[in-house]
Image (tube, rainbow, N blue to C red):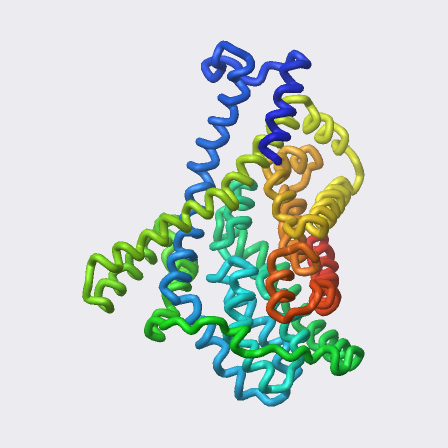
Length: 427
């Protein structure tokens, strides 16, 4: 949709007599210039952020195929069964779930894993199904990670080093917000259980939650999904003179996993066949994110071609509190679109390319606009009835998505307020 909108805007620019390309870039035929710009956008995005996103998707897909993600989740959640103060588990599960999202980036995939592994534990301890579902539906939101596609795109577009963007900016806002959300979850779930009574304790057969049992690899495989993150942090802190980006470190992690598979299975053929899951995952990254980013850039270029961005940049020049105004406008639009569509990141990808120029005209750093917008895009997903994660959890528990949203609404709304306040104070 964004791609089509961008092409339509470029056609409008041609009708208005505005040249799309000049000099050596021009094809010599105005209509072909539209597709030349599309080619240039694809090439630029694939060489800049596209290959990073595809590599991260590929590695996540390979880890999921090997069962390494399931092992990691199982090991991290196993001690929870020893806790007897049931509502104390609510903030603990929320924090652990967010940590797990560092290497299981898909909210819906993580929800499926947690419902299979963690729900039976929470049920035995006495937590209601709706409390468990409400917490699990909010675990993959704004954890600071250099493995997130949105962080990669934001850092590249805004001109930040990825490590600095994530750990020196994102983390200053996201970590306090997550801690506050954990506390709100504790009181909100307790209140809702008391209010709903027996209706909160939906009876679910454990077999339905857990699905088919599949053989898992050895426990030491739990470290594999964390390898890219470990390498990034260690090099960023202790070996800053080494120039190794996310793609390099992810490929290193992939080959380490492949060697382990060779040794464990004492075979070359089977591990090599399994390794193609990595490249299938790269394809998913291309179709799910890179194409959306390309569409967003084309939309931004269309806006630029017909003069809308120039109009916006001119309108915010010399305006008092322009930075605050821009932050609220972009974040508000992201919230509304995310609520309706179930994925606010579409708005983020569509506008991130134009934010640096607009922010510069308002004499502010683009991160002041982009970062809260990015976080709200991830948070609002957990209160949208059409979001994949909400529908997954609701279908497993066999309740209406609205019942899950009742449990996620207060923590998420408080989280959004925290993001806006901290962004205006810190950035």
